[in-house]
Image (cartoon, rainbow, N blue to C red; front, side, top):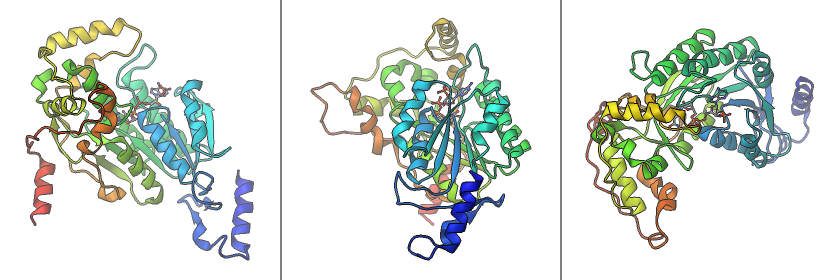
Length: 375
Ligand SMILES: NC(=O)c1ccc[n+]([C@@H]2O[C@H](COP(=O)([O-])OP(=O)(O)OC[C@H]3O[C@@H](n4cnc5c(N)ncnc54)[C@H](OP(=O)(O)O)[C@@H]3O)[C@@H](O)[C@H]2O)c1
């Protein structure tokens, strides 16, 4: 790798055809690694950057890898399940997407996965605990291990994905461990960029599609819990843009532009899918927790007791940092039909969309937005 980079660098500086190569094609990372771009634009491009995306096989990871590859980045995609890694094959030319098997507990494998990269993304996370991995194993110990090895291998940049509601004082174990993970990452990699996205929606989400199938679980807390949904493509774009923004370190919040109640989302899904509103009862928290606990004995992922707790926690009211990453986040209504049309009946498939009226939710960020618009 180093030899090929040196050759590329030499040819870059001595090229007689300025249309082919120029000095702006050469950049160096903070650790003085030369990055030389060449080739045509698009999937066959070579930007010279190498990125490792841990957690690439998940919902957000696939969009991120596709965007990075499209920019000509060589992407290392660590995977656990061969089937999950197959979909990366068409995302880049031969050799551009490098698949590597890994285990979050195996330091040697982690080092091999990130050794040649100039940026490491850690998207690893899990909504529920399994018999093999607790929240802490994944969000705290795993995150710290990746950051520590990245620092030891001289990787210049790490982008760690946390959650908008990460807090050490949260009643949810998931949010607590996300916050502890952030602290550990910052300790071993002080220049890490921590990203805190809000709940994401898209084709494979656990938000709109889940509301369409299981509305009863979104009626908890009388559907009064507030949420700041964000489009997964916007978050993937923000993460991609970070490649060209090396000066950004610290913690960035990427929540959706609006604060909405679960009730609004239930109404939205019902009006977009043209299905009648759910007549399921509002379950008391204790009953919901008992049901969630009992459902853990099945072998497929079911709503966990911690997720029940999270359904009662409003999304953090912090200001978002979209400007810093040069992305304008979109409203959920812009994309709802794309992801929900499949729940319409054949008769209603092409009917126009009518959205329910929004009930305003007053929050710090909406005040700030109001101030900005009326200044
Ligand atoms: N989805 C949201 O609404 C949302 C909102 C805010 C923050 N986040 C955070 O953003 C990140 C990405 O979210 P997502 O929705 O894309 O998550 P996801 O679909 O659940 O994907 C999680 C990824 O983490 C990997 N992973 C989980 N446990 C692992 C383990 N023990 N060892 C190795 N790999 C493991 C999974 O690999 P396998 O495919 O091999 O299981 C998968 O690639 C997560 O950290 C999540 O907490 C998500």
